[in-house]
Image 1 (tube, rainbow, N blue to C red):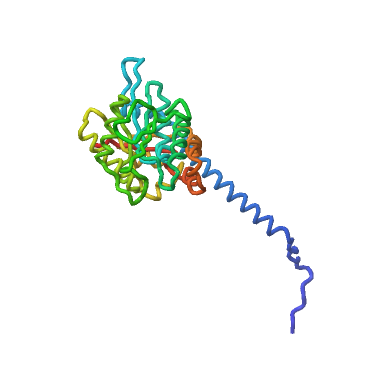
Image 2 (tube, rainbow, N blue to C red):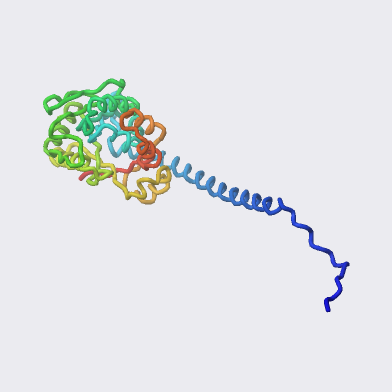
Length: 300
């Protein structure tokens, strides 16, 4: 027999349809607030690291080329690259750090016109514009176009179109010829220090590696010139973007570290290479560590 129902026992309150959704929204908002706090703390820490390391820029610049006692004498640094857009994709933090020093004058030689797709003439003009954006040259149209070592002359920006130095993954470059071009470039512009790729070429491009080997041969002949190489990192670190600012002080204590004072310049320099600025290169500029940090060591 069923027990009689006790009408004095209070009934549970009826469920309110919106209460579950309200609680979910409150919990989600709380989780987002916690995540925001973590991100803000990480951002503040990153800014502190960035400011601390940027203060060391002057010391690192002095290791590449020392300031002259003669205030009117500018020290000259030369970049040796393989293709138009290498300067914008890989070297912008360093270029900006050097160009911001009033006693340093920058020069650049590009050892091919990047004519793989038949756009050599277009890419030559793009390089001139990019170098102007990066404050290497004073004019967006200033560039010396040459085909032989004998034609090398004083110029802020020089580009080479030579049959033995043609853009392409399967094209092996004449490293002795590279040595000769670099030697003429250094002599014509009275350059004291040069900067190029390391043995891995950042992207493992064989032309980049040939350029490194050619510069190394030049240094072995000319010990009075200092040479520095941009360090290739692992693939995951290469695409860590701005967060490499946190890793550099830990992983590159024995290398020279340069942070970009204005990462937007990397985008603007790459934008000057409009024929190459397809969607994946736009992503590269945003996510690549080389838009934010450069680490170097000396070529021995």
